[in-house]
Amino acid sequence: MAIVKWSFWGVFWLMAGAVMHYSLPQYDVVRIVDTYEKRQDINDWTRIFWSDPDDLTNTLENRDVQFIQAVFPSGKAIVYRNEDTGWSWPPYFKFDTANLYTEASDRISTRADPQWVSIMHYGWRNQFFSIFPNAVSIESVEGPNDKPFNWFTYGFLVLMGSAVAFLWRAWVRFRRRHLDPVMEEVEGGLDSAGEAVNRRWHRLRRWLDTWKGRNRR
Image 1 (cartoon, rainbow, N blue to C red):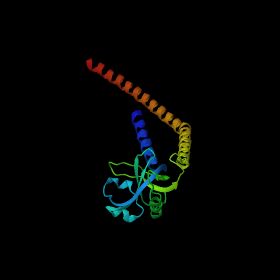
Image 2: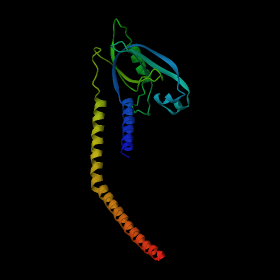
Image 3: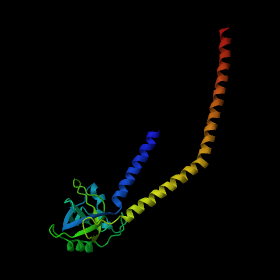
């Protein structure tokens, strides 16, 4: 039973961590090298990794998506999608896709004359499943090491951790004050009932033994 319990909580917190890692904002300091628009198929299970800014989006099998190509200071390439989130999850309420696309195009630079920017985004990049993080905002920075501190994510994690700890302590106190005494009474009642059944069973056996003795006579 303990294995099932800890397995359940392990899977629960693993899934919760994955959802938070995907949804919370992250910052990348990169150099934008190109912007383009491409028709993308969204008719399989990877649809969950594309935005649904309106009801019509759910009925489409493909649509035009804007992309931002960039390079990290290390030279590693990264591609972001540029989609409105609308009122859907995660709640970034992004409606300025066209403006962000213009800002990204205006900041295109070369390796010889780099212009470094900080892109706030959410989501993951997976080349095998064609999953792209969604760019939310772009800000110019002074250099490749000028990465902004992620105040929101760390603050959210601290608040969430505090809330979980508070709820856990409240649950433990509630269980000790109210549930444990009831369970002890129930267990005590079951033990008493079990003892009563055993006594009656022993009496029945003794009575049956007396009949066995009479039959032998």
